Amino acid sequence: MIKLERNKSGIMCAWDEDENASKKKSRIEKLEGWDFSAYVNHHMPELMMFHVANEGAFSVQHRSSLSRSGVLPGASDYVILHSTMCGHSFTLIELKRSRKRDSSVSQEQVDFIIHGEAHGGFCCVAYGAKAAIAIVEWLYKGTEF
View 1 (tube, one colour):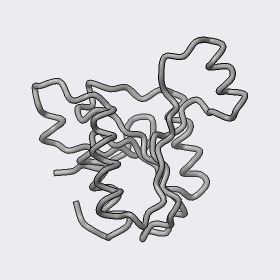
View 2 (view 1 turned 30 degrees about the horizontal axis):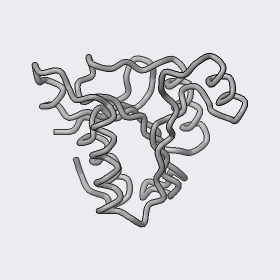
View 3 (view 1 turned 90 degrees about the vertical axis):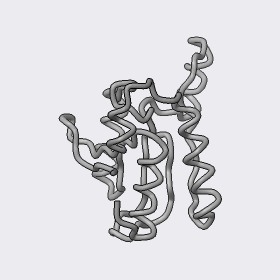
View 4 (view 1 turned 60 degrees about the vertical axis):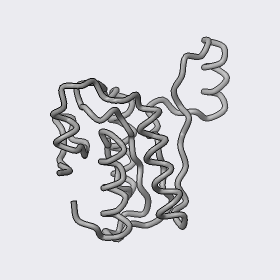
């Protein structure tokens, strides 16, 4: 079952209770992203969704170059440029590993999500592809959790 609630930082978070309760360490974020992206591209191709490649081990010089080019610290992983059925003008999803204890949310990510909400978006942290898919299905198809 998917849970959706605000955390102590005040941001919306979604997770699958069974995956979160697992004793096994969760898959790396990149694999969760591949599953999520493949699902949306196949089942909801009408959505203009893209991934923000904002993380990685870069040299100081390259990171500086990226910053000058407009890369924002804390930018959410996925952006959907469509209005939701709930009336939000866009969606931001920060995708994490499926077990909450295997990932952390940076202050920059919290600030970015709060800023996105203040500008009319539905913004959340999704722990795992299953939670991210459930959020997108709920927002754009009206499917219940």
